[in-house]
Amino acid sequence: MEFDDFNTADAHAVGAELRIKTKDGKETDCYIKLAGHDSPLWQKITRERQRANMIADLTKLDYVSTDAVDYAKATLDWRGFTDNGENLPFSEEKAMQLYIAAPYILEQVDDFISDYRNFTKG
Image (cartoon, rainbow, N blue to C red; front, side):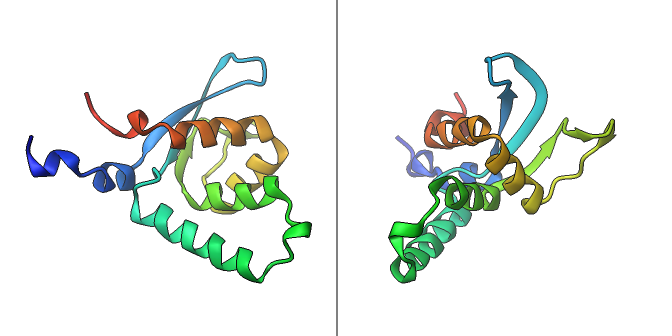
């Protein structure tokens, strides 16, 4: 097997698109592009979270919010989201708001990022 065939960091850095489903499992026309766990970006997010946890009062951690912050940082782009009928441009802040307001979407993001097959070809 070729040495470069083991490289996952590049594909994870480019990211992959998740098609969002409604709470009852119906596919939507909304897509979120995410960086994978092997990306340098995700490694940075992990280090930042570890440092924050070392100085935080762990009894006061709100896991939905902390996960929403981390996954918003790993969100590269989105499409299909609207606000009052107008295209809603992507921002990390809006992604975080979405993940907090809709934990079922946060769960989809977590499941997607955790599946390495979403970032590899073939």
